[in-house]
Length: 289
Image (cartoon, rainbow, N blue to C red; front, side, top):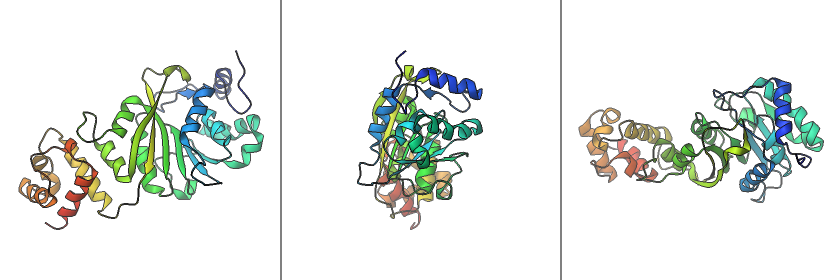
């Protein structure tokens, strides 16, 4: 087996660390650890850490696991704040970095917590989010962090391909839905690369992809909570026309029709046909009708 260069973990080291910590990867936590150094390098390259002119970037990593990607990110010279829900993994990460990249220890902060609960008080003001996320929490985590951390300008996450398709989908597509619209409120998401199953341990039974996200200008044209409530209502009954699907949210089908007309949206259209701007128009009209 070819040894990995200093600073990156290989398959043997991943298994050794897992054995040392008595870590048995669980589906519940979505634990599939990346053991391929080339994949780590590719993720770091696509994350473009520090390429926007920031000479002292702070990167937020969610779910660092055994530290493969953490070491790659630290290798760019960036500061990394790693949020890990598993206490055993969180407690070991700093020692792993000290063993493989001792000069980088001072640039690492570990937060032992649930990413769905953290805010700037826990992680500061990171410029970028880079993470390998389990499919069942990927979208909630990204949306939570975009809402809580306005400093985040760029996101690169590795997720199940099915989730990646939903995150990056545009109006009219079969997989376009709530995640697509809510992410569009904050900016633009796109799939950038496929990730083979073989780079993980244990090997998952699903395909993975990398999704990149760039935050757009802050939206001040509508209340976010109102917009998201409209989106939730529209897709809760996605086979119905918007006039019918929004009836409960609006108070009645008649008022839903009035709001849609005021927003310039055809009441006979369906949720998957609308982009974020149309949802914003509906939320604004609701305050006026």
